[in-house]
Image 1 (cartoon, rainbow, N blue to C red):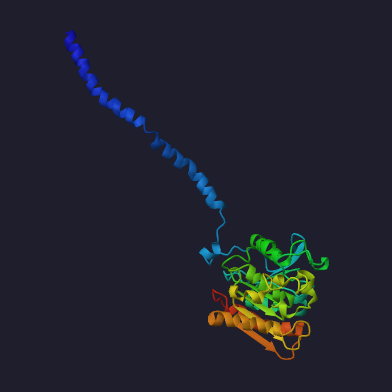
Image 2 (cartoon, one colour):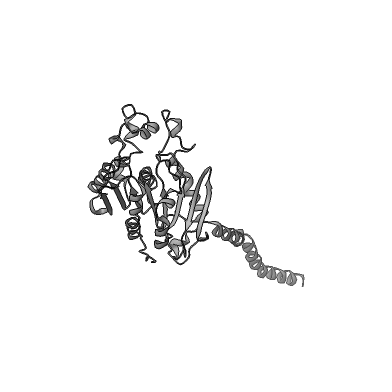
Length: 331
């Protein structure tokens, strides 16, 4: 009897051992459990990241426009200590490319000068362009100051070109969702502001899609006695590299990328007409038919708003022609 009982227990033990082995095997695989726990734990985090990562909705879906500024004027806005005005035309936002015009004044012209002396708002309304007008004062849109830069020519603690690139553009992007990559970003400048258009386009490649300059100056080595240039860069004879380097638009025509409209009056007594003509010739020679370039030399026109205001229709037609989405014009 005892032997039979022991044998029976031994047989039962043989039956139980496989079950114990199976249970032990399952308990010795923490990776599977850990994987499930990790997946469950990271889902909320991944969701949070997805919600907070900036998304370019305009480029993904042209029907979604993230623009909240109301139509009309938004005046006396500030970037550091520099004021700017923003004008938003009626029904703005129906064109998903958000056409925008950065408007640069001449040397020591107030930012209101364009609006007070030319029908700029009329054309902004007709073509549906938001206007950004910064107070640029006395700047040559220089990339930096030098020991020879005179105090009167240090318009701000930040050089003009650096201010546009590092402060104004990021502020406009973050505050108004304008001047974003992929949008219809354009520029217009007169006189020194025309020079600014060229330098800003060169220093911010791929951001702007078209520009217009009126009575601008682009090759300062042809005006070596210019007081503004010497006030910023020092004398030409001593500092030729500064005059012919980064801040010389004509010396950088190989880098040029965007369509450009130029106009200059032949009777301009402030900036020689040759400045625009030489820049246009250099661009045309280098880029040939690969870029849309227009130059209008206007006989008898001077350095004034009679000339600049009269160019606005041609300017907006050119800018609109180079809108990559080819949106229509509202009359």
